[in-house]
Image (cartoon, rainbow, N blue to C red; front, side):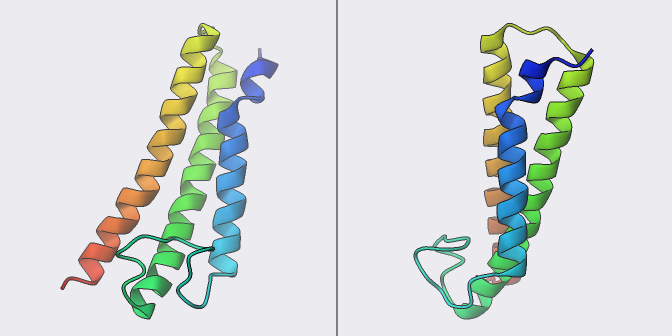
Length: 117
């Protein structure tokens, strides 16, 4: 049985937001280095070439992370493990934080590999 509380899980909301923002960044990446919009780290803002690469690469990672969050939330709803709400929220936060870490570490590693100094 699907638990509606699990379906309304923040994991789904974050997954949808990650997927939509990732798609926007993929199809409409920022053209120039800026401090407002896009994947902004010291390494990605070093030059225009690393900026352009980081925008495309991170947007794909963000879409993948979003889809994974949505799938895991629905799997959690179907499995119905009957966790305490505090444990469920803790696991949800771990998944979201893990997705952000996946996005940043993956992009930074790819930038490092592609633009070695």
